[in-house]
Image (cartoon, rainbow, N blue to C red):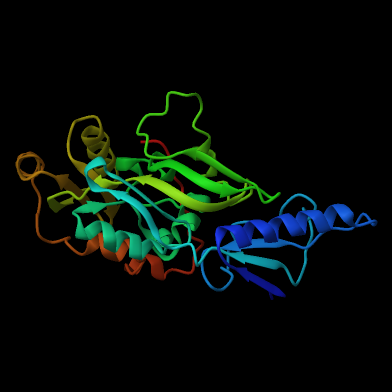
Length: 287
């Protein structure tokens, strides 16, 4: 897809661009599709755009879409480490956000393709991660947002409130909406203290035995943050304080040093399992 126009600017400039496109579509005397609008968090269009079209352009296959980029909206707006919240521009890269959090002993459960996205792209795509079973999907981390509608109007939802008792939390609709509800400008997130201790246990187990043990641990208050069965080996990751991890490590048993780099290779799809030409599917389910 080749873009004919790249719009990069401040919140006001993006709003004016959307409003102008909307006005142009209304003033057209012919019932023809308007230009396709693509939103990206990078300086170049992402291969998988977050917003494919807006009202008036639905169904168009414009070879030269209008591309709106939030790359310049990459600042830290407010950071409250003690309250475990941070508000950033939607164009900030996720790796940069994680680096800032790491400096304060904080963390976000992000892995896989989410690491390569902007923060706004991570929310809009609802990017699944290998941490979802332990910490929940993207919407669980979303406290609020500031967004642009297709008419160029600004809306504010939530922000800095751990529990929203004023009705349905509309900001969570943005998680996984692929940008179809509007353009994310700012995102407020709940962050997590980084676990002080992390240990990986490796046990020999058949497929059935591995599933049984995973279910048993899921029903107990074990600090289990990851589980994977591969090649007759069961990998279990424990994350938490030293006393809890040590106690459960003693109960579970197994080799406690053989899988330290396993999760990184799993996250980056560098295990031999991924070398197959067979289609690869990712399914996120409730634990």
